[in-house]
Length: 433
Image (cartoon, rainbow, N blue to C red):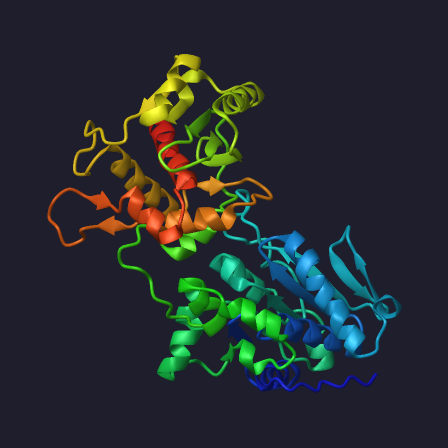
């Protein structure tokens, strides 16, 4: 079967040359900016190998199985279309077994690298047998999973066909083991012969449309450095309380379990905000949210519905008692109002809210919280607001401070109401200890 691997993307051509040759390289990190052709490269390599060698077994791994089905499977189909091969004539995707099955017995298995409490070291992968493998979006995957997937490679028909074991890793920049084990060593000239790193950038990929590049060029801050420039040494804001990678993990920390001790936090509209935000939590896991511009009466009805739905006791209802929030107490007498400027229990912090904000930042950095609300439409807003948690007067020897709400408004152009409910969430967690 003749397959033409012609590409104008020289980075992609170099990657295919390593993956399809008998060179000494075992592990290839193809990483950098979005739009560099990383996924297409992995799909093309595995399809070629599966069509050329009957009965071989490859895997593609990602943190969530659903992401492989939604985002990677279509690229396998796309590659075959570009080769004038009809997907359904050569292979099928089996959703029950989560694999692509070829007519000649070859397979590509979709593996989920999600953390499991029963297998914290990901040892389930070490006992598997594969010809080769690919870790997609590897920055999302635990290092122990990457290690055990590596062990599974080179154990299926490699000797029979003389196939060298190959491990492709694709990722966007992240300050983790990929940077230290590949990128930094490459810069220092100390990368072992068994490893290679290819920098992926969108401008080398002539197949990407102008609209896609324009979208990337519109990014700002760390996102621009990572996803457009492909900079592994992206700058962190020294004043930021929460690091970028931990903010991303805040939405994926699925190892955090519910406690059945549910709480409800309200940030009542007022003082420059037209929104009423209600957050429902279960221990260290956020499970539901309502963000609206309703009048107070409708908002209070929503609170009552949440209380009934999630069986939240009044002593675990917390609200901002400043300003109009004081009216909340009349409807829920057992609830607790937070006086933001109170210095009681503030200790070395400017006030009570500042202390809670620092504790929130610490818990997010330590991956102790999980915002588990599917299809949350305001995720980017929430990320922006968490990024607003910045130290103020860093060089001062006085009490610890954060920038004011007015300063946050100047940064993002709105009141950080979503951040406020996260801060008050810590008060509930502290009371559960």
